[in-house]
Length: 403
Image: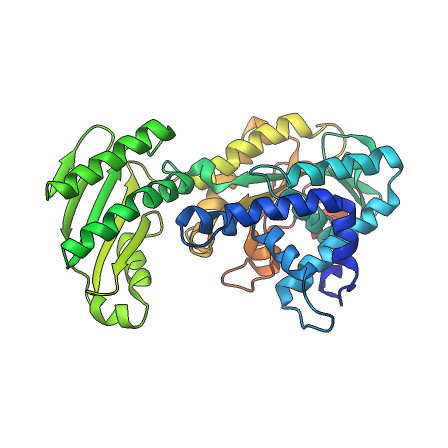
């Protein structure tokens, strides 16, 4: 059991906010309040991206005695871990931790990388290892060193966005839908019915100019009541929405699930309705190539292995956190063995020579989701059988393959 599963200290969130700086925290919450406004896909995307910070903010406002969910208990415990870590650090090193917190509360950044670091450390302690935060304490390129039975290993903790492996980024899709939606509301009122606009975007979307151009093409297509519009950057096709059981699904709020089942996990979907007429307009978009999320993770691992592990006598562990991946994608990457295959191929390359194991986790594990949404044991882990330290019994709890 992780220490984070124990009863949380009710004062932990207040102490964590103080560590962040109360002014900086308040400013960030005001910023997120603007970014995460409901009523748009962009706002919903901001809510998802900054779910951790928004959850901590809600915990700040909870009343004494309110029951916490299991996910909230974990977040409170991780916040307490950050405070306890700060108390062990001398002033210069504590300032380094504050800098990391400040960076996580700025712009598009999040606190996920720091909480991932704290979670990895907690997991290794639960396995019996002595854990040192050498990145903070000594400025080492790797973040942690773990020791057990006279054996020491380095751990480099890294966060990778699933967007790095998508050819059509969700943020760009959200921005397009938010631009198109007002036009659709007007158009649906004048054209009652059920419609499906399928879009193939060979190179995805890149920049405001392309976004504005695609918005204009959709608007012109609808105004002219055209069925198809083809170009090098996008192929658009408008058809009646024909989906088995769709009418009944609408009543049960099940249409999004039926659409996802038909178009697959990689499609980007948006649903616009006109409640007065019962009309529905669905937009479905795909890039011209399949997503390469597992490959993006391994590209980052190769860079980290060469730049952040010493490659000396201490074996190295890469602890990757795959962010901005939803439950279905994460489960699919595991069930189809895409992540396992990509990581095991990486472990055969020259870049992986200092790596004795790779672990992978997501927000599902961070928030304590049980299988099948979360990975069994809290992470996927792959041992490198070609590393000299792969068979050391002392390291087995940290490196033994989980699947």
